[in-house]
Amino acid sequence: MPSDATVHVIDDDEAARHSLAFLLGTAKIDVKTYDSAAAFLKGLADVKSGCIITDVRMPGMSGIELLRKLKELGVTVPVIVVTGHGDVPLAVEAMKVGAADFLEKPFDDEAMLAAVRSACAQQEGKDRHRAERTEIESRLATLSNRERDVLHGLVRGLANKQIAFDLGISPRTVEIYRANLMTKMQASSLSDLVRMALIADILDGGQNSNSASS
Image (tube, rainbow, N blue to C red; front, top):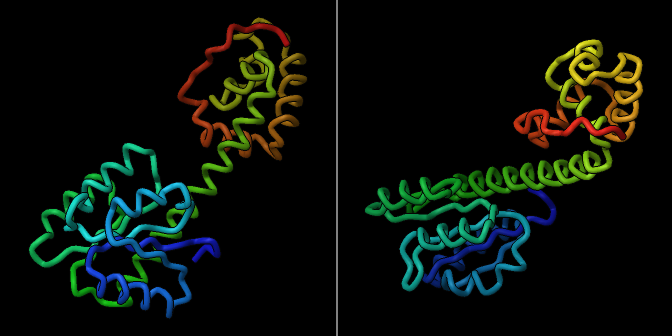
């Protein structure tokens, strides 16, 4: 479990909230409880990492309505839905809306802890990927148009001579741009550069520069 992960438990049943809070607490997992989806949404600004556990049936806003609201707000924290025996179709619907998992009541304690750890690990991976992409995009912003042209050629697997021909410059000039962009991108190798390009999705953008000189 990430050290800063918090599990947010939403259930209108006080006994169910306390039971889950006790289970998570004995596993040394930080937990916050809410008696309604509305109460949780009021404190949404403080939800940074971890996961959400919500009952599917609640008065006011249901678990599925909460999922839709979170999706609308762009919240990516994983959601585990807890459902009664008769609510499996609702749980399946919740999965379609974006729930990471669902457990039927009464659930096994170890199954719940496993689901929580899996959801939190998933969120940690997303956070790392998002931070890495932001850093790569900041490096891309330092490239000149010509360096970006050369980068597109490299990630398409083209040799320096082909890139030079396509851009109407000399192979030696391509080598200079290549060395500059490797430095700016802090890439240790061509494979590292391609990995960054994939993370930043620049391969989907094609070669859109206007071949302006640096």
